[in-house]
Length: 427
Image (cartoon, rainbow, N blue to C red):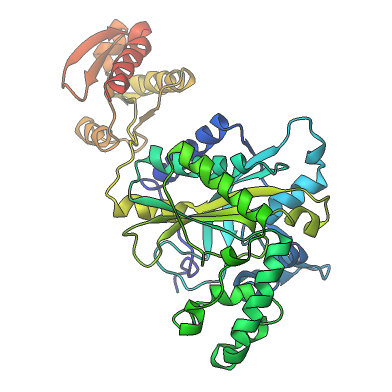
């Protein structure tokens, strides 16, 4: 019986991986421009981190985590998201003590959730996210949203819009919580068992329920915007003004609560029209109580996360082709044993000087090797035969123009660099 990849996971093969690398490189480049530094955290953490950080009443913690006990009896969990791990590292390594504040970080790596696989939603998925910890300035909320939008813009995505909400401060959330309990209590027997258990523990999570989303009582539930105190209202207005100043269009959605418990004040999602069943391609918000909840001092923070799989799906849906150059600079052909040895040494020197190059390792004939060079999209083919070897030259063929010329052996690398440089500049 052939062993296959587990359900909800996928192999990313040559020909596709270049798209991932392009997106990841673009994300890293934009983060450098915004002065965010990369952080890499373990793939698994102590389960308690996500119970406390993400929230015990969330679907992620209750239903979706991959949790196991190690040989020492410790409960460990494959990380379902990146913020809790980043905040744990921020506290553990005392990053708050750095003179460069706020602490601005980003991550790219695999996350794991036990969900029903569908387009853009996998059980192992790759997430790119940023976190800015240590500032209460509404401008950094706008900066985080702008960074995400900049990435999508430079990838060529259109048909995007931002949905925005405020979840308020602790005082506002308490008032809203009491209103939600009062609103749902007379009807809670009509709801699913999850909602019933969350009524008094975390009524906000009822608004995130997929099973009961169409109930009329859900549609008439009190919104957090009706319970924002003056400080929360003022903060939200400043965030909106910064977005207006940046020219970032948004829609205020009072029902946007996100699926994680740590959000306060700003919450947002970036939506893509036409992606199919999954329309949210980015989500994030402010989490002012999370650092303290995990064990640190009371520090504010904000961030977002996006799935690379969903980005790729959006690119495909919108017909955006990324400018991926998968071809080789040069394919080297040696005809005869002595020429093969010379070709092998030339190939090594080409690579040392920064060229992408390869040769045949199957002992194929000249015609078959030329076909191989064509399949590899080689820009130049260098041919060394017995005659060329005796005259210390090579035959160089420009695969785009079909032109051939003889070039002195000690000049061939410079000539290949010249041709490939001009080709890249012309793209």
